[in-house]
Length: 237
Image (cartoon, rainbow, N blue to C red):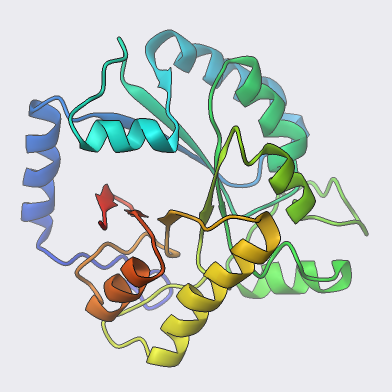
C-alpha cells in the first residue's frame, strides 16, 4: 500500500475474503461494473459489454437495492449496477444512450465541485485530483464535465451518487475540516445542483465504513443510506 493509493480496510484481508465467500455462497449477489471516462471511440465495445450483460442481469434502481438488502429481491436474474464515475461529459453523450438501449439504470458518481467549475479550470482540476479523462480529447477547449442541467434531466430514471466534493480519500486521521467539506458541503452542492439529496456516497479509493467513525457518523447525519466501497455496498441506515 502506498500513500498515493491508500486502500484501507477495517478488517484483515483474510476476514474480507471470508466475507466475500460467505456472501456469494449465500446467494447475496449484485454485479457492479465500473466505468470512468467513456470516450466515443470505445462506443462499440461498451455496447457489446452491456448487450452481453442484458442476457444475465436485471437493471437495478435505488429502490431495488433497498429491496435486495431487505431480502425482497424477486427478479429472475441478479441485479446489475453500472457505475459511471467522475462526471465526465462522455458519461452522458456516449454511455447514457447505451445504458438506455439495454434498459439499464446508470449510477453516476460525481465529485460535487466538478460540474460547476468554469471550463478553463476543469482540466487543471482534473489533472491535480486523480481525475483521468480519455486519452483522446473529444472536447478540446470545451466543457469536459456533465452539467447539473443534464443530471437533473435524467435524475428520475438514473441514480446520482456523491463521490465526495473534490475526489478525495480519507484515512483514520482525516481532519474534521476535510470531512465537513467532503461530506457536508458536497451534499449541499448536490442538493443545489440536482434538486435532491443523494443517498449513496463513495470515497476515492473506495474506503469502507469502520475506517473513520466520524466519517460514518457524518454520512448518516446527512441522510446517506449506502456507502459504496471497493469490496462491498454497505448499508448505513
